[in-house]
View (spheres, rainbow, N blue to C red):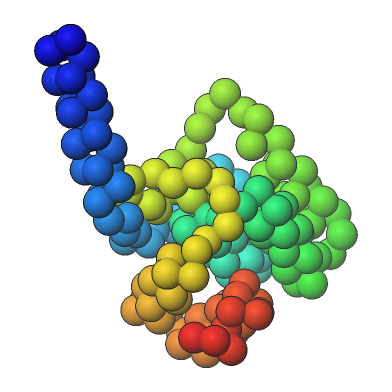
Length: 158
């Protein structure tokens, strides 16, 4: 009986300690279009900005529906600057990459410590992410556009 009580007390304290763990984001990093070119030979950074935006979203992640929307946004962005062929190649590569046995650092929700599940961001997480986005050393107008695009309904509340 004493062992069971000790195990129970340990379990309760362990759960409380895990619940008290504060999640935070690691510093944002990007390598452009991971394992792929950032543009054409004549315009070597043509769609790099699309990949950087994609990396930002992968940094803080969210639900699996958010993942699908993010990959489609990458496809749309590349399509706008480089056309259908490049957009389809990049989109297909990203989607195949989700099932690859080789895992890159920049997987969905890679920035969270501790790692979080693939679920929608809570209101508190959303506010935290927006604060972190605004502190990135990137063009503030681009960041605000990104926030509006990714947090449409929540943006008005924050």
